[in-house]
Image 1: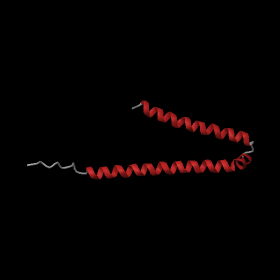
Image 2: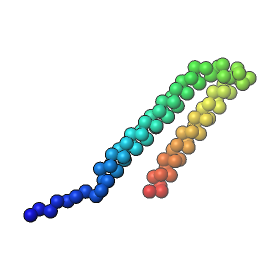
Image 3: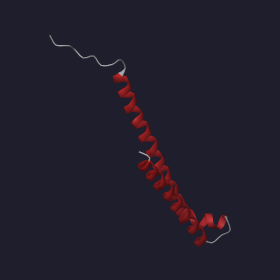
Length: 87
């Protein structure tokens, strides 16, 4: 006589919920990446008009945009490094 193993109550529901959460997180990240690329494209096209509106030169505005991009990249790399160190 073979004993049947019963799965704990709710295991399937938890697995399906975890899968749904994974896809929701993926969708949120994908939309965020799309919006960041869209924002960068808009800024690159209209950078001259933005510089004029703020009463500055194009060179100065581009320099500030590059600095901001570098800070953002550094922040993401630092967070990635922290997560690896704290494991």
